[in-house]
Image 1: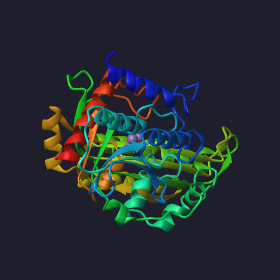
Image 2 (image 1 turned 45 degrees about the horizontal axis):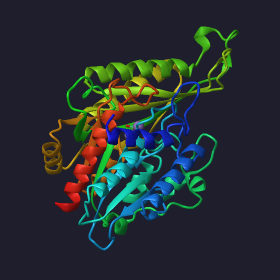
Image 3 (image 1 turned 180 degrees about the horizontal axis):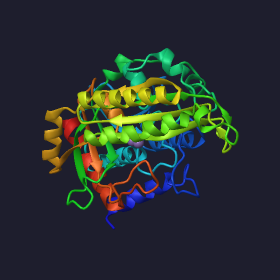
Image 4 (image 1 turned 30 degrees about the vertical axis):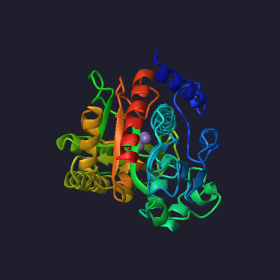
Length: 399
Ligand code: GLV
Ligand code: MN
Ligand code: MN
Ligand code: MN
């Protein structure tokens, strides 16, 4: 085991148990709840141990600073701690742990960066608690209104402002102006690198994507006594909509998923009164995504008419196509001798890319699985990711 691999493992072991569900082996690290708050404390401890002052932006995002704050705009790196329900270990935290280790690498190599380095932990990247992904970076960049963000509520009715302890501060152009570039390291979330020679890739683009809530209202009634012809069953509309989404996505080489559903009253022996399904749709091109969502809505509406149900569709979030800074991606790919690839997964880097030169590094994932306990990365590949990130930061701070 290389020295760097051993250092990665030692630091990784500090956070590995936090928020892990003993049953599934996955993680329940929802933004601003116990496990994520413990990781934020761990972040402060790591920063403290390295003599890096920590600042907060009033939106729930944390920044740890290395180097002279007056020496120009900083190179920002980092990611998020929060997870999806029963998510993998690496999605998010790998980018933060790697950032601290990359700082250690640069220091050990005697690099005195010509500009500062900042390590970020962004809040609510997954949107698993409050429904809007990349909430922290959207607030910082002004891509979501403060009122809307403050009022988002979790399943227990707690608002984001209550969880944060204050109304979010919103856009902070002065803070953004303190960053020269952002580099987010992340576990790869598909199979592009699995079985390939390269442990690290550079991102070219993020597919446009979004979330749409399909709420279908019918008539709750008795499962045993209501004649089949007398029913207004929203479950039928919902089920048809899921199949239509799958079909329409396949037709377009796009991705459509309904991974969350809520049923009222959710009883085996009652026809539901309401079924709500959340559609996650993504495509390589914005026009393909638009056509996909319109087709699913049209088919769902037609089916609702047949079922005698009422359908309401609400867009909960939409993220445009992100083309990362092409010059930067090419430069980093040459520096690292790494392949360049697009992804269908959303990231804070996608939000920040509209404001700063931004790049992403992906670390090979042998299972190709993510948003699941089966997400994986070897310690050696994670160490290769740290080494790559250190080179990139070294290049961007000095070059
Ligand atoms: C976030 O990880 C997303 O792509 O949904
Ligand atoms: Mn994720
Ligand atoms: Mn992530
Ligand atoms: Mn993500």
